[in-house]
Image (tube, rainbow, N blue to C red; front, side, top):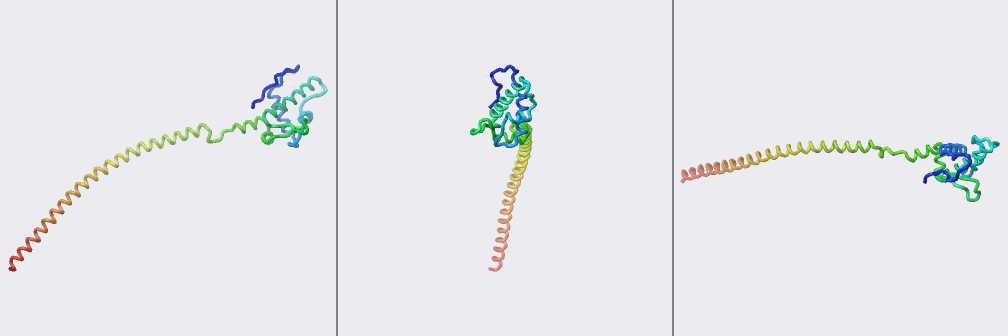
Length: 190
């Protein structure tokens, strides 16, 4: 909800928004009881107006009305239903009083969290990029290692087959030698 300047014109120039914010901050600073306070009373006591000058008196009334409208528009203050001239601070009003005024309260609302900053997104993108580059080179390294292991496997597979063949050949040869020696010994004993 945005605050807008009044549409009616007074003999005094329209009140500047900065002036209204300045006087609203004076009001917040000088509120003693947040549950009920009189805007006109606080502005009379702490404002910088000379009430004996008619132009100043008219300006005072206009600023007080603008401060009330500003406070209601931003949800800082609300009028007491039982006593319409008295107001009370809402949660936002209390927070604005604690922080030191309207602008500081608005800055606290607009404050970005660290994870919403641009540099966090850039950092995440950079880390993902580095990880992708690492995976690419690691993938090439794994492919090379796989190819070398595959060639070693083929080499060992062939050598195992050759060794098996040699073993079988040696086994059959030694069995033949054993059988031949046995048959010659059997022939001699007969």
